[in-house]
Length: 69
Image (cartoon, rainbow, N blue to C red):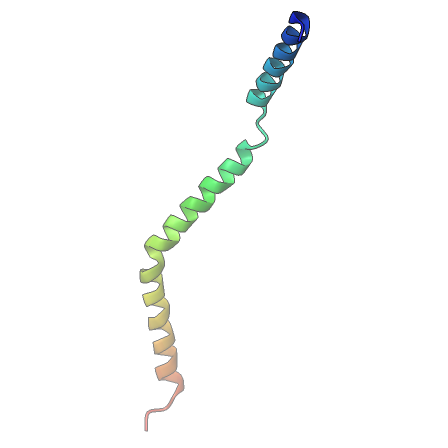
């Protein structure tokens, strides 16, 4: 490979990596992943208190709908 072809190849690869560094297309995907992770942590944290409250509401409804013998 001649020196000029080598220089041209290196320049084209440098230009490719510069454009790759400036590309922000994948940034939105990372942001969505962070938001989804935060939502999962919040759901895991508050799942049992919410579950207990919903069960309590359904128990109240059940006792009021079914007549006691």
